[in-house]
Length: 182
View 1 (cartoon, one colour):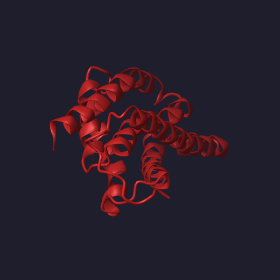
View 2 (cartoon, rainbow, N blue to C red):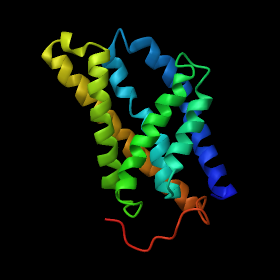
View 3 (tube, rainbow, N blue to C red):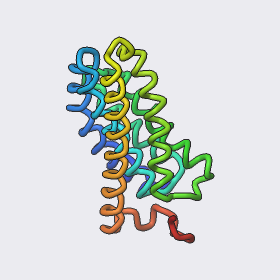
């Protein structure tokens, strides 16, 4: 790990943490009472690890970035659990790339990995928020909002990453691309 890599993870993590501070306040105020208002927010936790992996293309970048974001998010209602939550997201997003041995960086893998994580998270939120007691249409909307949020924020993370790459911030950090992305 180089200093530039660590500083890039810190910068992306800090930006993500600042984004998550108001998100945590909003999420904690609506999650239990209005889960349908919470569902569209879940994608916000995905932006940081997506940007980190897409820009830096190095193992551990999502985990380190989300750790920093979690530490910055501690002074929210989430408290220290913000670190655990962020690490859970970073690790989950990183797993798709670990499976490919960090050789595939195509947008579809970002979307697939984020979607798998979101489905698993939605199932746990379904139980935690007692979504089964809601009407069937609300249950469908809950899952649709979570998946839509994930898809939108993954896409936004990839756009941010492309724009950051265009500025040259990853020059000397990210490995050179040797195969075209599919």
